[in-house]
Image (cartoon, rainbow, N blue to C red; front, side, top):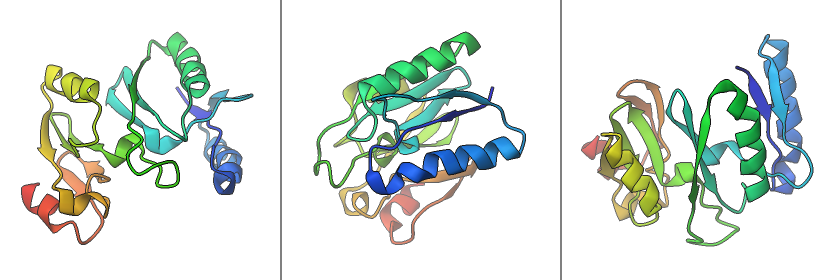
Length: 168
């Protein structure tokens, strides 16, 4: 139904939210909500499970208040929010995002770094019939899991992730 203006937790990224919202709004996309107060959320922590379910990772950049406000903004549109608590992994400076461990490739396929993926996420993907390709350890730190599907089964990914590319 429109864009939600997020609020960054990382100081260097704080100005991005309003700038992006202004640009998208200038293109005719309505603003359906803005995070306020202590709410923090980062786009890298969000991905659609289907057209009515938004997956949101709770991380060092997306807090409980951010999730609460997003859920409240989306509820009138019939959209539910499924949260996944992300592991500490390499710590707050490394900033593990939801999309650092899972990215969709097409409706029935995703790449997943299973070592750091929340069990509930793996269970939800399986329950939805979404097959997974486990990103090998050697591709994890070079963002082998962070792929962008530009069409079903067609992805853009960082070079150097040869093991993941071969599995895809």
